[in-house]
Amino acid sequence: MEYFVFHFEKFLLVFARIMGLFFTVSFFSSDALPETIRLGLIFLVTATIYPVVSAFVPEPSPNMIEYGLSALGEGIIGAALGMIMSVYFTVFQLAGQFFSVQMGFGASEVFDPLSQISLPIMGQFLYMIFTLVFMLGNGPAYILNGLFESFSRVNFADLLRTSMTGSNYGLLAAMGDLFVVALKISFPILAMLLFVSVTQGLLAKASPQMNLQSVGFQISIFIGFVILMLVTPALVNIIGNIVEHTFVNVLNLMAEMGNG
Image (cartoon, rainbow, N blue to C red; front, side):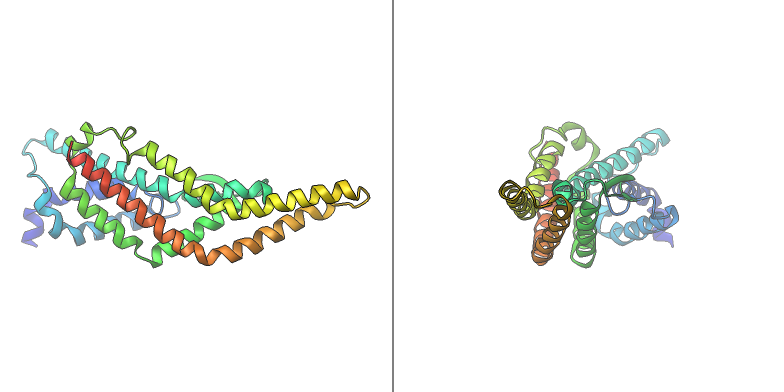
């Protein structure tokens, strides 16, 4: 109890950074997660890693205003890292959006409680697979390791010196990777659906009396689901690679920030 009392000010600084991360990263920022549970999880993570990272936390200022600014800076660091992670984690939503229209689900959207917007149903389906694999795999361990590295490498002054958009590992680079990876994931289904569309066009031209409009959507949906079932086992490896790539880029960003 004495340890907690004498380190309460440092503990709050660690709590502020973790809270900034958990309120911006995709999995924990959802309104579907009650605030009490989210805050309890933040407190649990803080209590878990505080003995390890306390040596990297600067001594709190005795001035209340300076201490409040320090806590605000810690929260901003956590929020910045959470935003970078969230960009990479939405790759499967974008991949599903690429082929939803061609597959026949262009008008089928569902409300995503995480992002608070309506998304194509196939993008939400792929994102659910990603979330399941992430939580069952090493995803939580990656987050804890990223938190530890952030305390050992980055402070608020480093964040101010670094361009989060112009960096090779910042927001613009993350968005570029997002489009490339999403296109690679959706390419097998897009290619097959394009082949189906071309085949239907040739059949309609060769036999105008065939009513392909009545069966065209059903064929596209069926072929899309068949290809999706075939590539789903490979998605597990893709998800692992994306998660690893995400946290490698986050670590590189923190190293770049630490070097000024």
